[in-house]
Image (tube, rainbow, N blue to C red; front, side):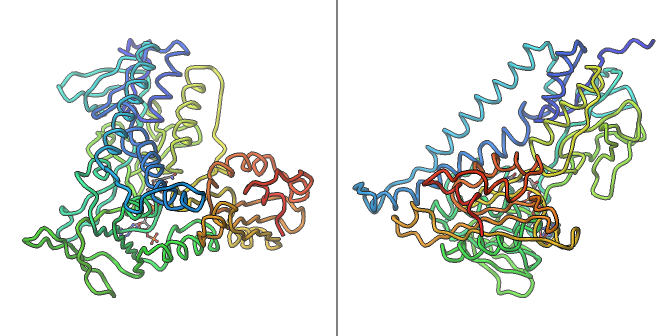
Length: 449
Ligand code: NDP
């Protein structure tokens, strides 16, 4: 048998790579992980974690206004210090980064702080030229924000840079209308910026249920966010005063202080040497893998965003765990990609699991839809004219819930619990059998008409 330096060499210490490294090491494998930037990856360093903390910070803008209706004496001109929030968030990122590093070290994983590229089916080459061999190589390098190749694109930022801004700009234009666009639109807006979202299509958040998307659009417009549709990005020109003039199809140019691209993410496979091992990539540059995360090269595997299946942290973690259990733990595990819950931490947030109404109609034909359209008690007293909407999509023949879609305060927290019931295949009747927990917003789930 060939003597390799390692049983497993992982490239990328993000959510998927870290889980796979740690679990494979716990199963007794000799593991190394190479990371060119910081242990933790997108989610911890410049994604879910710092974003969620900014969302919390942003929410205080509304909470402080509402507080007056609840009897608290709050000055009209409450001061907000962006540098304080930014630095506290970055400090928390450092803490989690250190915790991830410690976990890997305590499992005996060799952490190599260098870029590694594949140089053969069982070999990687580090940035300093050192070569390492391994029985298996796991590609867990994630993805990066796609920036349109347009004039002046270098004047724009992506979500990567948004966490490090010196100040909150007065006018922000966000290109794209997906997850990142809507989340950062809410954040910048709550911090006082005028926000314009421009999208190439007529829609926001493609893939979510139409009624929920419409509600977010309606509330966002009411709050003062500006949307421009059919507005394909054309270019940015920077003036002597530092202002950015953005040109787009079908609309007048917009003059802003900051442009942020949120137009999807692409797998980080460029110049990774995957061709040296015959690893096939798809049209987007994602590693093509089978149900066991194996690429077209027998000894090379991939998990997480680099495979472009579902770009969500918990999926990358599950894929990393399944890979390690299957190939180092003697327990074959495959991921079930059905009924994966997701959320957009917009203001207000939305969350969903399962099929949208239109997907269910196409797939099942006979569908029953139940909704609850209500104003949360807290919003009523606060005088906040923002209605929540819950929508349940059921198989018309069996009553089985095939989709649950929600927008309103705290819905990601509520949907996580409800998703268990949807995953378990429960019916509308079984929801209705459950006594409402009053007074909550979640009780609407068992009271839908
Ligand atoms: P999304 O795929 O959510 O949205 C991309 C947006 O950009 C869409 O509005 C799309 O328009 C538009 N777009 C796509 N390609 C182009 C292009 N070439 N030119 C102009 N516009 C374009 O991507 P995000 O960047 O917002 O997020 C990336 C991924 O990260 C998400 O898919 C998600 O999986 C993950 N993520 C998850 C979060 C969460 O779970 N809360 C938070 C943040 C990110 P169109 O309407 O035509 O499709």
